Amino acid sequence: MSRLSESRISHLAHLVLESLSKAKLAEFPSDGRALTETKLILQEFFHFEDQVDDAVRQKIASLSRYVPPGSREWDVLYRKYHEEESRKHRR
Image (cartoon, rainbow, N blue to C red; front, side, top):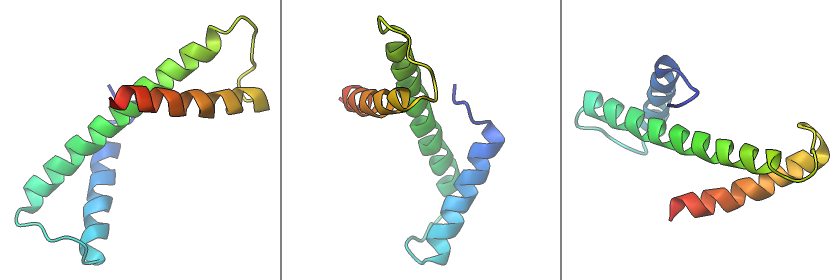
């Protein structure tokens, strides 16, 4: 389950479609279907990001030494592990 509510995802989907339409980057034969598909894609994306985030936080927490959240070291490790986990989960 995504950490974003259904209403926030819906709002983002509306913004994406509105932006694509205004910029004339896409035309949709069915606005309803385009909205539904955009919501599904956003839900999948945020679910994937949540899985990666959970894995990264778990990896940092399992280190033999305590790394305080918000510290420079924690941020560096988070970025490094996030990149690794993203690659691993995309396969």
